[in-house]
Length: 220
Length: 220
Image (cartoon, rainbow over all chains, first blue to last red; front, side):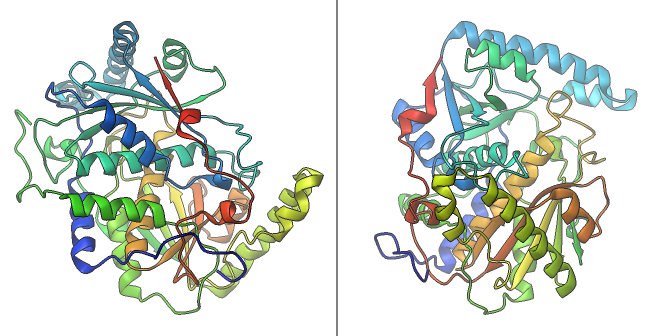
């Protein structure tokens, strides 16, 4: 940094052992749908929401909005919406895959002790519009990095997160009674997992395979 | 996991020291715009792209597509597009903020040794549509988690990443000559940073302050 004073504190150094463990974290982070009923302490939830705010955001706009959902009626309404959307998704699957689809467990909404709705404020005052004039979607992307930060921080505490996207955004926005202009990013189940694995559940279930690297890269 | 065989290997345990260092990583990850000219070894770029693919993806669709941009003419065209979009963004700033905006360095496109264009395949065969019927935007969100994974993995190797969003997606898609249906997620500068800090550059420059936690959370 040439003309701007650096922050306080000495920069950390990340040794080989940390790098190797970080790699294990990436490999063993899972989308979890099978939880035990052990509650998540409120202090842990608070800490995870604080860590999430260390994520990057376009123009430092910090557009993430977290909704901790405790009310049983709201939770029940979210589950009902999932059931409707999942039935429609099942109906939309090719006939040769529908039995396989129906056998998958795609959410832990009944069991997860902690439920989080996550939204984006699409027109935050913070950031003064910087960086998002041509790409307003970077607001939502910023919130996604916050979710991913929380996900990793949860995993190192032995907690699993499950991302539920088989939902109708407008319905969830109404159920959670948040400002109607907020953009629904996802609904999340948080809790202690029944088991740990280094393989995605959809891969273990034979739904999809991991792509080779070559399939995802080109050079220009 | 009750009915699905677990993956191979014993689950890692993440001790307090690792958790504390992970927190340092989140705190010291920056959006970098000031790079030194030291090249990034090809093996490091390859490794980072491999790590990025450990990110979560909707339906295990793995929709990330990475474009390593080496061609000087394409890089120059990207820079030119940034200059146009940044001038328009400056013109769109409130008059009392335009001098401040103009003083900010918002991209390291001239100096960064490695350039990456990142796209999403919006209709991947992989995943068979699972999880994205009501929320097709989860495809783009999956790619964002891959970028964030790469960002963190780069930081522990002493590398900085800068996310350039002040670009016209259609123009960048054409410059990089990728399939026109791919969705442009962002353009990234990767290299060794001139300095490290635990404070966002936009905060240090007085552009924006960090929000208090209460501003980002509600309970329902």
